Image (cartoon, rainbow, N blue to C red; front, top):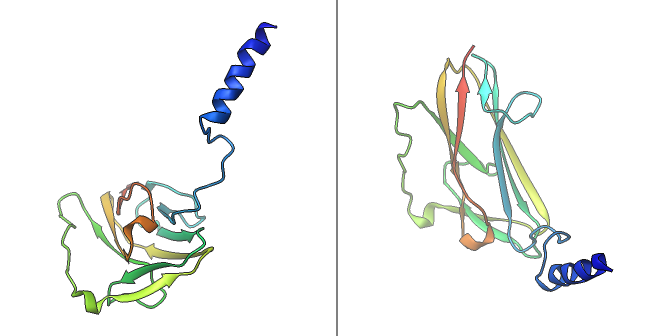
Length: 157
C-alpha cells in the first residue's frame, strides 16, 4: 500500500510536468557537429607528430523546412567550412569582412545532412587551435546549441 501511495504521485508528476525522458530529438532546429579525429574516424584531442588529423563538420536538418545559409565567396560549391591552424602565440581571430552581396546563398533541404572532412598533415609538436570558418545562417534560430568554432588539439611524441 505504501508503494502505491508513492508511485501514483510520482507518475503524475512525470506525466504532467512534461518529462523529456521519452521525447524524440529536437526537430525544430538543425544541428552542427564538428570534431578532430584520427584516420579511423575516432574523435581525439591528442595526436602524434606528423600524424594526419581529420577535421569533421556535419550539418543536419531534421526539420520540415529548408534551412538557408550563406557561404564565403572563396569556398567551393560543396564546401561547408574552411579552417586555419594557430599556435598559442598567434591570434587567429582576424575576420575578413565581405559585402553581403558577395556571399553565396544556398540551403540545406529538409531531412537531409551534409558533411565535409578536411585532412591536416605535417604538424610539429605543440598545442594548436583549429579555427573553423563556417557558413552564415540567414535565420540564426535555425540552428541551436553552444557554438564554439575552435578545436583545441595537442600534437606530440
